[in-house]
Image (cartoon, rainbow, N blue to C red; front, side, top):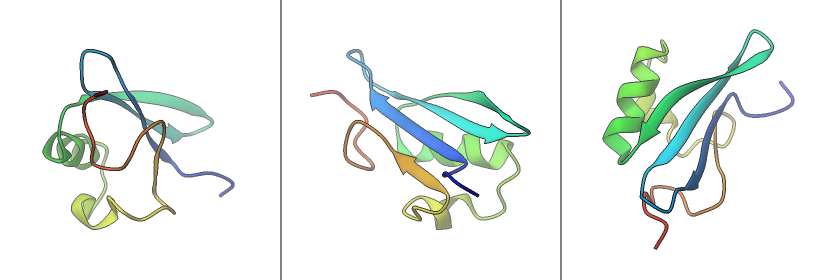
Length: 74
C-alpha cells in the first residue's frame, strides 16, 4: 500500500470533516463526520472490524489539514 486507505479531510468552515476511503482504485466519500463517534460509525459501515482501534494508526487513517480529533475549523 502506498498511501493510507482512509482520509479525514480538513475541517470545513461550517464544521465537520469529509471522510473518504480508497478502495478498488478509486476514492469513495463515506460522509461528513462531526465527531469521533461519527467517524467510527462510517468505518463500521465500511466493514472495518475495529474502527476505534485504528483512529490513531497512520497506516490506516491520514488526518489532513488539521489535528486529529478536531472537528471544527476554529
